[in-house]
Image (cartoon, rainbow, N blue to C red; front, side):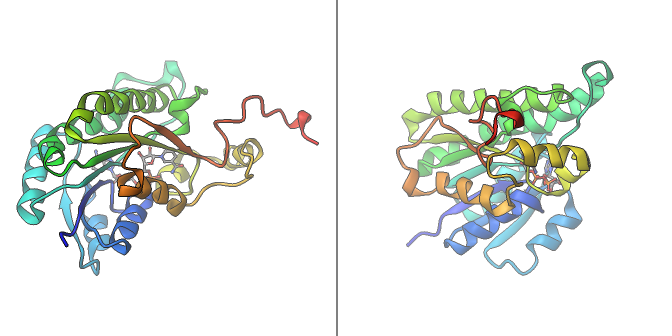
Length: 250
Ligand SMILES: NC(=O)c1ccc[n+]([C@@H]2O[C@H](COP(=O)([O-])OP(=O)(O)OC[C@H]3O[C@@H](n4cnc5c(N)ncnc54)[C@H](O)[C@@H]3O)[C@@H](O)[C@H]2O)c1
């Protein structure tokens, strides 16, 4: 049987590395993409079914060269996971255009560029795309003017992809994680933010990388063959809760 190939961006650590491990457990090969060369090579060492490709997903020339290199190595792409992301919390007036662009470059432009470059290969396999959004793209909050807007745009981009690429048999879905303790969140979640999240989340805790990655890999699998254009929160119930006033609890 032909081994399927997943391309995972931001695969050097965190949620992307966890998705890489699950794909391998399920018999796939994985093209691991990251711009952090040292961390990527360390993560890929020992994973015989994975190959590292150093690439900044926000730079069109690097993306084109990376897709060509992945196809030269593996010959096909069955699933694309657009997971590479950066976070930066700040008030509207304190968000310089440079900070805004830094977030949009990776979180939005990167998803557009890698998906576009991979589309011919995904047409060949009738493959699927999973984009990583965030609960910050589903609900507005203070300090997330750039991050939240970039993730809301990723949600809409997913729907555009599902609408337009469906006729080629390509599915596109978006996973919106709640808080997970990774390098990305540690940098922006203070102890007060962590406590407030625990309070607002019905399951009363952060998620794990694997709890997010399991949903990603399910959406890439044949078990989700009739699922496209969906935005799925893996967030302990945060998004569905509405008015989560502690005073209303029993
Ligand atoms: N951790 C959370 O609480 C949380 C919550 C909601 C959404 N997310 C989203 O999940 C995704 C993964 O986040 P994580 O928490 O695992 O973060 P992480 O920082 O642990 O991993 C992100 C990886 O992406 C890579 N990367 C960043 N910019 C890149 C670029 N331009 N080109 C190539 N690689 C790049 C980094 O080098 C890193 O290895 C992100 O899209 C993030 O926004 C995370």
